[in-house]
Length: 116
Image 1 (cartoon, rainbow, N blue to C red):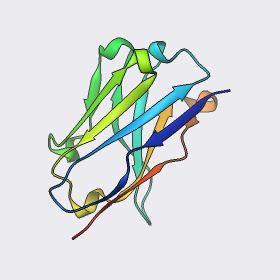
Image 2 (image 1 turned 180 degrees about the vertical axis):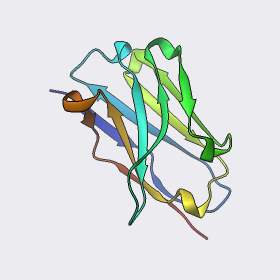
Image 3 (image 1 turned 90 degrees about the horizontal axis):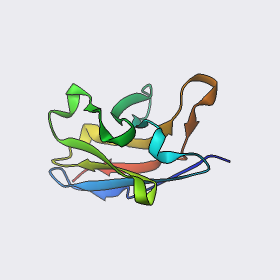
Image 4 (image 1 turned 60 degrees about the vertical axis):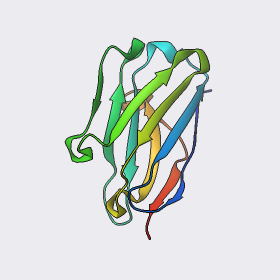
């Protein structure tokens, strides 16, 4: 059974940093592309970042303006999202995801709130 468990969310002031973690189980983690999505209230879920097997291909969406970075630790079956210089518009629920189509799996999400 595939499980993705996110952690590390919380409240932070604008300009602050958070590191989200997603620990996976139930599948061969090191062979899978992992992704972070987010969904703000009233908005559609959007891709934040992705990292391929072996960290050979990583990418973050342009709107992060270089503030976010994705990484993985295959020994710990964990993918991370480092978020720096957070802005109020980054407020959202952040989800870990793997797989495609009918084989897609999602975590339960972790809330990130950026406000003063």
